[in-house]
Amino acid sequence: MMIPSLYYLDRYRNEGTRTYSVHADFTEAQQPYRPDSKHSRFALPSFEVPRDQMLVYTAHPSVELQQTYLRAETVLFCIHPQVLEHYPDDPYIKRTLSIGTPCGGIAVAPSSSTRTLYVDDDNPPHAVKVHFPFRISRYHRRMRQEVVEQAVVVSRELERAVGCLDDRFAFCREVIGLVHKDLQPETPRGENWGYLVRDMQPFPVAAAERNLVPGFSLYGTDFFEPATTPLLFELMGNKDPREFVLNEIMIPIIRHWVGCFQHFGYLLEPHGQNVLLEVNKDLDITRIVHRDLSIGIDMRRRRERNLPDGNLNAYNRMETDEFHSIVYDMFMGGHFFDRLVALCLEKYPNLQKEDFCRPCRDEFARILPDHEKYFPKTIQYFSEKRDRFGKPLFEDTGKAPQWRP
Ligand SMILES: Nc1ncnc2c1ncn2[C@@H]1O[C@H](COP(=O)(O)OP(=O)(O)OP(=O)(O)O)[C@@H](O)[C@H]1O
Ligand SMILES: [Mg+2]
View 1 (cartoon, rainbow, N blue to C red):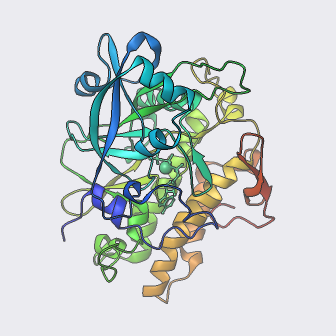
View 2 (view 1 turned 90 degrees about the vertical axis):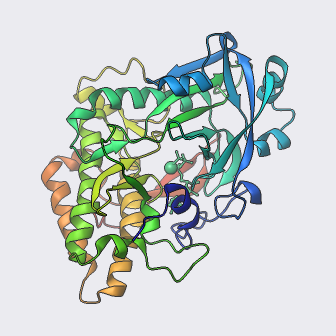
């Protein structure tokens, strides 16, 4: 079997997966900019702007990416075409047009998250995650200054200390952040925005050629060929389904979640869209690649670890335990693992959900014995109420967790 490209799987092996919440399949993206459309690519407007007019964040970008996005005197600023068209009065669009020189469109294709765009120029493979203040699923997808900066700071910290995680852990580095300076200091939070450049070559860099498979594409239906066998079974081959799913997918992800939490206070969000399986030419899963470093950060854990937070800004700092449950019980357990289990039970009716949940609970308790100190007793999720910035509040579902004790 030939594994389709990441570009293909991310766009077209994702049918039927956005059912995990009432908002999951909602999008305000126009047809040409959606991943699940037949438009192969579009032009991303770019502008050369004076470097000293911008905020620039870096985490060891390759020379090639620096040459494209960061020059000595200027940087390349990108704006999603739907944003450019809909918000002509946005202060940062006006600012871009006044200080920048248009320099054409970059050929891009939408990834599964819609606002992260694969750049056609593949040297090295990379993506840009752009400001898209339209609602997709639950959120308006803004790239405000503190969000951009935090992702680059987290990338730098993780890159330096990746050796303390196990050797099946890899991630996509957020290597460049470019943001406008704040033109409205009177607003209650910085609304100045920009974008990120993401290196799509998993870090640490692997010696051999590998394929990347998004988590959801294991169970997602193909956009063009709905009868295609689920990728989960293609990769499983003749292996024992329970052992394969547990040992190759679930347990490593739980170890990565706990490792990132223990070492850095990071709250990874390993749902099917943020997790990529790295697969070698023999179809073995070699590593789990985590993308999307816009994560919550448990400051209680960082203080315990005596980790200086000097470079971190205020974005997504957590002092309480609700979000731990949202990402672990709901994003990873409910939105992702439950779907893998459902697919297995359909094909192997002698299996039971507990066959998967129990070993995961045991492993979680083994590697994080003091989990009760950090986690709430019951599952938390988003409420339909929002704060003044439109961020959903949390609520207690009262339900008992399944993927942890
Ligand atoms: N199967 C899926 N599970 C979860 N999210 C999905 C799935 N398929 C598509 N998506 C989309 O992916 C996005 C997930 O949100 P998330 O905050 O993880 O990503 P992001 O920050 O927008 O982008 P990226 O992951 O590229 O950094 C949403 O836009 C959601 O609609
Ligand atoms: Mg994501």
